[in-house]
Amino acid sequence: MSQRISEVINPIEDTYNLSNYEEIRHVYDWHQAGEDLRFRDTGKVNIAYETIDRHVEDGYGDKVALHYVDGETRTSMTFREVKEKTDHYSRILRSNGVKKGDRVFIFLPKTPECYISMLAAIKIGAIAGPLFEAFMEDAVRDRINDCRGTLLITNRDMVSRVPQNDIPSLETILYAEDIEAAPVEHGGEQVEWMDLEDGMLIHYTSGSTGKPKGVLHAHRVMTHQYESGKWVLDIRDDDVYWCTSHPGWVTGSVYGLFAPWLNRATIVIQGGRFKAENWYQLIADLKVTVWYSAPTAFRMLLSQGDVLKDYDLSSLRHILSVGEPLNPEVIYWAWERLGVRIHDTWWMTETGAHLIVNLPGEKIKPGSMGRPFPGIEVGILDEAGNELPRGSVGQLAVKTPWPGLMKEIWGNRDKFDSYFKYEGWYVSGDLAYQDDEDYVFFQSRDDDMINSAGERIGPFEVESKLIEHPAVQEAGVVGKPDPVRGELVKAFIVLREGYEQSDSLLEDIRIFVRNNLAAHSAPREIEVMEELPKTTISGKILRRELKRMEIEKQKEAELKKV
Ligand code: WT7
Image 1 (cartoon, rainbow, N blue to C red):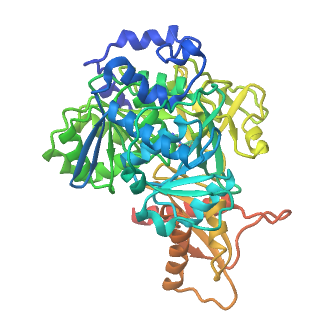
Image 2: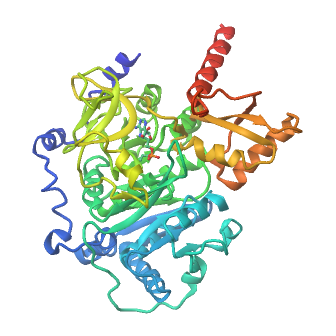
Image 3: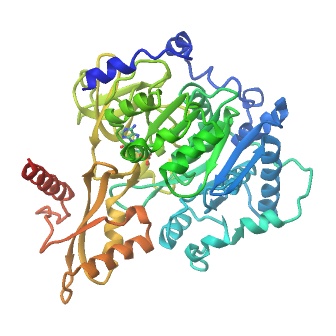
């Protein structure tokens, strides 16, 4: 099967300038990268300036910067309008006392105001902390508390999930409606000129132990984001680019906002939930040319079969995927039905931008994530940190440093250091192998992290929430293999004395996690056990054993079907 797919999809040469891409692998050099960015002239930098203002200065003020679509709502804004609005937001943040280095959180749905709030905070030297729109109160509070955020921008629809009084550092809550309604002043330079090492963005990401960690990125990340936007997203001046992720996730900020706008793309911001018909309609109406999404979404579209035949999707030139393993069937489907290949990309919140990619026009090997981005060197390491020969499975690591690499984990030096346990390497936590042509094949995580629909979920955070429920004494949470979501969150629990297992109790527990943490973290399945498997010495819950049992059960069920 995979042989056949490779034969079918390799020889696409259509609109691409192949020699260009082959050449960059030879000549690419991080020192030369980002020549087009203005900080090269001054040494001083601000990614918000490079993202928007620079284009206005260069004469592209009238170019459409964004299309916003949500149900019946359709609006557009030019680069000049985005700049002016960003300046307006920046002035209001300054008048509320925001200073360089402050952490400004943004808790908004996928709307232009969300993107503009992020840029406005960064423009005046603050660190933007975008929060996923579906977070519940506890998730919002934990994150703002962790890095002592001082200001939150939200809107009144989110109010029930905004913690009002119990975050000591939080001085101000601003509502986007009020900022929009405030009189616009003109003039006054808003850009705060920064050093490359100054922080600009904080994203919280799950670990297998403990609460989510604040991954801090510095302004220098822009070189990597700009270059990957140019080479991997392949952005050209007449493109309409759509990344489906919310900026609360790193894909939605780096490839929804920074990389495309650093490359002066017209972006699409789409609100509302996933619905195949709406997605296809959007592509057809706006003539989307470059589309970045995730395997779960592609699998859902694939499962809806012929829905796509009613839409004109011929504008699509380039499709990319990220976040979880991309099934060869999905690549094959897109090639067959859309006539376009899906290009897998691999990176992490911590890495700032793409590290392993399929460049346009280069050979794709279905089942592989692609090859290291030019300027990036990958190693597959054994337990002692030595490089393994090609073909062997080991820890996927990357030679340090590179421009996108995170600056720190907020307030957690030990956690930060744990990524660099082997001299000269960043260790990803993934297991993979690399073939003789440099293609990297993902195997699994090397830890207990769950990947459901491309979202990284830390089992510890879900377990901690479960045992806050009065009926739950102990909990172990694992990822159960699932054909659409990759994995789904499954919880094994031990009930407290006096509680009887029932469907309504389990539903109550599930809703408890959903309402207090986030919908995507709530266990889709809960199984009650007499006791959980544990290590004999330290008594730690053996998630690996739970997962093994679960996979065994699934295999047995499969066998019964035959
Ligand atoms: C983890 C990082 C920043 C991208 C979105 C997720 C998994 C990422 C792939 C891929 C298989 C992938 C890895 C990685 N992952 N891309 N193309 N194929 N797995 O970012 O939440 O920081 O998660 O996502 O396990 O370590 P994240």
